[in-house]
Image 1 (cartoon, rainbow, N blue to C red):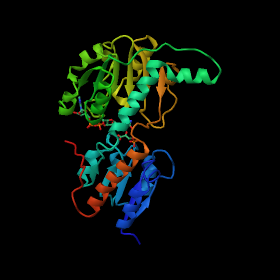
Image 2 (image 1 turned 180 degrees about the vertical axis):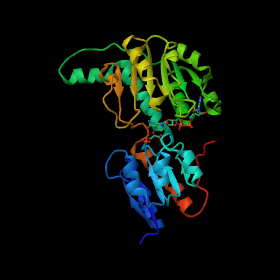
Image 3 (image 1 turned 120 degrees about the horizontal axis):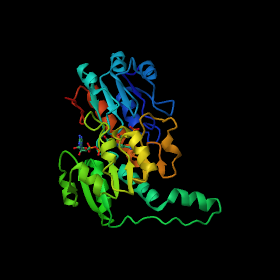
Image 4 (image 1 turned 120 degrees about the vertical axis):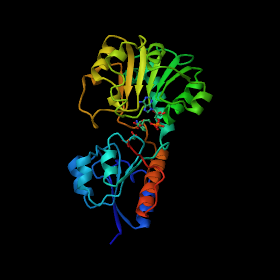
Length: 319
Ligand SMILES: NC(=O)C1=CN([C@@H]2O[C@H](COP(=O)(O)OP(=O)(O)OC[C@H]3O[C@@H](n4cnc5c(N)ncnc54)[C@H](O)[C@@H]3O)[C@@H](O)[C@H]2O)C=CC1
Ligand SMILES: O=C(O)C(=O)COP(=O)(O)O
């Protein structure tokens, strides 16, 4: 009989790299991995975790009423960074610690953001499809070099994006509530959101989803966007007003939009999906072989610390 039960709803935890699971087992835990290959429903979380001591989560929605039904829970450890899908306040009120894995996937998200920017700027998706189908059609894209990029949220990922932008001799604008010393060193010029939107050729979103950032790019903000800009969203879809986004792609305000994130995951088919100037990826920004190991081990560091009765390294608190 194992001393503790750990349930992981995170789709990739323990699947790509086994080391984090082995560490938990060696510590005396029974580990249950996600059998579905998709986020858990609320009912599934309750069914699997009502007797669990620790829950490792991906982008699953973990509301307060679900947390309340998991009576033995001591920790909810995010296998990643954003904790917007977890009711942290209720967890904290119940004495359950919430942790995340900061900085474990930032370079990877920045890589994806730049990859998506390349795809849209040069029409790579269509070019690939056409060439494979025997059509010799050369899209004439736009250059990345020396353009202005606007980074909304200059934290760990935003700064990693800025680092890449320096390699393209870009003029880098940043919007954030605080200034990041590394970003300043990289030459990021902090401006207001309105100025960023009206100046940037490329807009990349890297804010966490909070009450303050929900719908931060609303219809009024879309009116300020420079005509022909490209927008990349590897942060959270709820930062953007869906209708304003769709209209901006139809009327040419945005030349292109790429997203890795959706209001609900997996998403239902949205009108946006039918537009040729939209590129979609299935929330893969943070996940590579290497980052998976980092995210898994950090989640496990936090779980083991809590099970030992110690303070975990990456506690997330809300006011
Ligand atoms: N697509 C994917 O797979 C991934 C997506 N993400 C998303 O990216 C987000 C950012 O990640 P990190 O850069 O690691 O987080 P971070 O905490 O290092 O950076 C977030 C930045 O946003 C700023 N910020 C917070 N509230 C703000 C507000 N109201 N107005 C202006 N600035 C504000 C903070 O000051 C900070 O500089 C995560 O919260 C998550 O939602 C993270 C990892 C993977
Ligand atoms: O680290 C993050 O915040 C992420 O978005 C990672 O993706 P996930 O939540 O594991 O689907």
